[in-house]
Length: 530
Image (cartoon, rainbow, N blue to C red; front, top):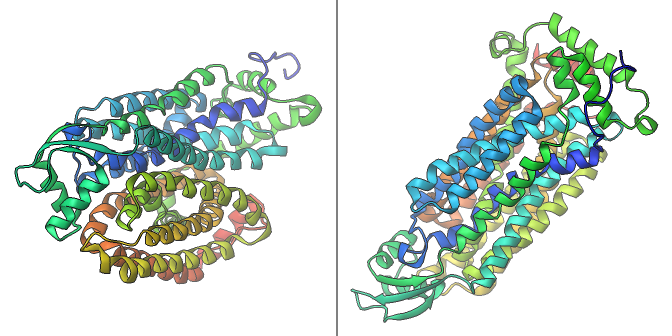
C-alpha cells in the first residue's frame, strides 16, 4: 500500500511549508506590535484624522484583541482537530484580512472594537494552530528547529511592525495638527506638532494629566492634521495575510491529521509530498509510528476536560501549567510591546522619537529569541525561568526608580529632562533581551512537553487560554494605571509581583530537561500524586 499510493500533489520542501505557514506567526507579531505606533496618532482629535481616544479606550483597543485571542486559541485548536490544520490556517488568513481592512476603515472607536476582536480571534488561532501544523509536518531530524523558527517569526513580525511604524511616522513628519481656534484663548490659530500642543496645554493646566489635556484639546476647533497615519500602519498587515491565504492553498495537509481521521491513503499521499527519501529515509517507519499512536489513543482514556479535573494529579499539573502560562504575561512584556512609545513620551521623549525608539526594543526582542535557542540547550528550564523572573523584577523596579526620582519631580511643569527618556529606553531594551531570551522560550517549550499525550491538547489549550486572558487584563488596565498612579508606582507593582512569583516558582516549578516525553509523563505523575 505504501509503495502503490502516489503523492497527493507536487512535492513541497519543508522550508517552503514553514515559510508560508509561519506567515501566520508573523501576522501574530505584526498585529500585536503595530498598535504601539498607531496609538499616538489615534489620540489626536477627529478633526485631525485621529480617533480622539481616551486612556480607557486605549486599554480597550489592546484588551479586546487579546480577549479575542484567548477564545481564538481555545476554539482554533478544536477547529483544526475537526477540519484540518491547513484548512484552519486558510480560515485564519481570511480573518486577518477582514480584521485589518475593518480596522483601517473604521470611522470611530465603536466600529473598530468588533474588528479588533476579529483580529484577536485570528491571532489566537494562529498561536494554537501554526506550531501544531509545523510539528506534525516537519521531519524528525529538524522538527525542533522548525518549531523554534515559529517563535522567532512572532518577534520578527513585531520588529517589522515597529519598523513600518517608524517609516510611516518619518514620512508624515510626526503627528501634526492645525488649530482653527481655541475658545479658551490659550492656543493661537496655526499648525503645531502634537507634542508642542500637548506641552502648551499642560503648562496652562499646570498638570500633565492625560485625560485633562485630552478634554481641553477636544474643545478646540481643529481644521486638519495627519492623524490618519495610523491607518497606513494597520492596513499593511493585510499584505502578508493575502500571501498566507494564497500560499496555503498550495501546501499539503498534515499527514498526522489524516491518520487521526483514519484516512491512511490520504496520509501516505500527503507525507510523500514533504519527505525527501535521501535525507529522511523510507516513510514506512514514520507511517507505522503514526498508526500505532492513533490506535493507542483510541484505546486509552478520552482526552476530555472532565477526565483531567477528575484525576487529582492531572488537575494539579494543569494548575501548574496555567501558572506558568500566566507568568509569561506578568513580566509585563506586553506593556512594552503595546505601550512603549506612550511610556517613553511620558518619560520626556518626543512622540516621533519614541515611535522610532521602539525599533530598538524590537531588535533586542529578536536577538533575545535567537539567544534563547542557545540557552535552553545549555541550562535547565527551571533555572532559566527563575533567574528570568528575578532579573525582570529588578529591572522593573529600576524603571520605577527612574520614574519616581528623575521624571515625576519635573512632570508637573512639563520639563522632563530628555536623557530620562533614553535611560528608560535602555532599561526597556535590557528588559526585552532578558524576557525574550528566557521566559517565552521556556514557557512555550514547557507547555508543549509537560502534559501527557492523551490530554495534551485540552490541557495545553486551557493553559494558553488563561495566558491570553491575563494578557487581556494587563493590556486593558495598564493605560488607566499609568494615568492614575504614574510610571513609578505602576512599574514598582510589576517589579514586586515578579519577585514574589520567583519565590513561588522555586517552590512549585517542575523540571523537564533531559527527559523524553514518556519519562516526563511518569515524572509528573509521581511528583503530583503525592
